Length: 186
Ligand SMILES: [Fe+2]
Ligand SMILES: [Fe+2]
Image 1: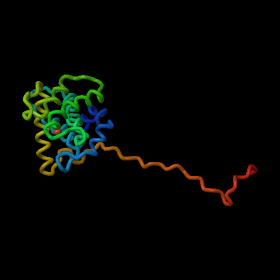
Image 2: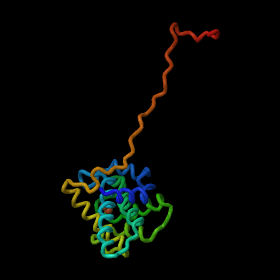
Image 3: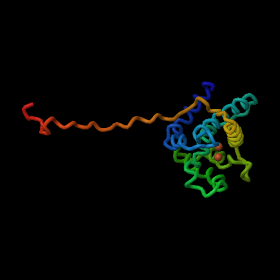
Image 4: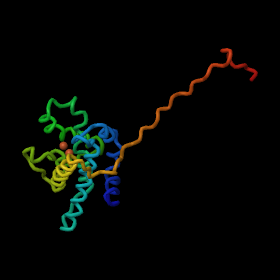
């Protein structure tokens, strides 16, 4: 992955990549062999590659909003088996749940981000995105999903999974020989 893509991901996505929700996304499978986190990173990376192509055509894109949308577009799907009755409900509801999460992580309501996430399932849903960033997100989502189903991850080698710290067990005091208290003289 090119260095500028990694830098942009970390610059604009830090609060998301570091969040508990994104770390939980490493626990949930998505598209058979991926996790929600790997998929989200793949979508963000492909989105940025599309941006680079559009730059050559002098088409400006809000990269911060695009990265945030890509990293969060599927976070609402976490816990899907407990939350949704069936795939149809999941398909309709997870973008709305992702919007709740992006608001809580960024502390803002951004119409470009929210519209892009709300409509990322288009054309499965009726209304197309309103903004360029939304069209890029829907395209990147489909490309990434297709690659993942073929066993290729656009985010191969890129991970923000935090290592679990070993749990410290409290030191046990060994009983003194003879079972007595330590002498006060000592
Ligand atoms: Fe989705
Ligand atoms: Fe997705």
